[in-house]
Image (cartoon, rainbow, N blue to C red; front, side, top):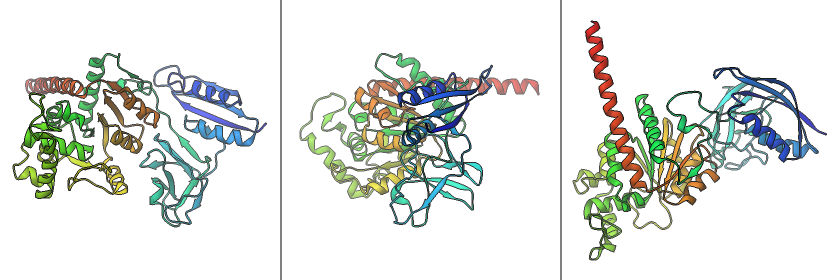
Length: 426
């Protein structure tokens, strides 16, 4: 039987990596034989395992090794990553290596080099002279680009259970979806992660669907922006149109947001809003003219939040700021992601999935929707690091704002006490 020796390094026991590897091998009808097992004795100690994997055919073994690599298995005696030059612009070689969203290394001149800009379902291009590797979407590959093919010389680092710290909520095992879990505890931990992210200068991204406006949650989002907890917003034509409609007319889809009653000719309000935005030429110009005075768009403009609005075939108008070229929209979203450490996807399936496809697995991701299918679909599409909360977006955001306000007060008290202590010491 064809066989290959593999190694596993890291916290492979308590992170369940070893058990996943063994389960994957047996499910494929293959076998394994462990030749070395060193188990770490403390939280800081790493474990090390070496095993030989054998399969009925070489084809089965090759496919199995590819699956095991996504779990962190390293092929013993691996050679440099093999590449084939692109012969047709925008077309990959047949055997191209398709990335996961996990941290990945490739072997160049006998050394492991991290792949820059990792995201799922793209190719890896190597620059051998510079000893660099980077992710490149299919449509962006150029003639002569050296694209990694096969699975040899590629190493993937699976997510491991956090060893300590306040962001335990984002451990690799926390991606289950439940409407029964204690939301207050989860929201508290999310607030802690957001607070810590901003303290170290990291960015927070909100992916917003129009239900944020329909459910009356827009003011909570505006508050998060004003508190400094939002640096980037992804959305579509609808979130901008309905938030602006609420600011100008006090309605959302023609329904009065205060009384909940339809207003006379209210169905025209979102079109009148878009027409106004088009008259002024942009969201920023409309805000600066004083036509839009409050809400998400006004807060984003006043606080210089980067907004990427990607359109769809059903959009009315659209608003001038909306990017209608989908390739350009995706590239603009991708360019906005460096530095983002926390993502909140709120009541948005299509833009949520699109964002998830671009995110490294190391980015803390929260998906909130009243529909369990939306939350589940994110994980099914590969965003397995996401925490799923099945709840109303308004309730979630209201509680999140309160948690962050409480953390802000605690931080001020701690700083004051620190200053008093320093003064007393002097």
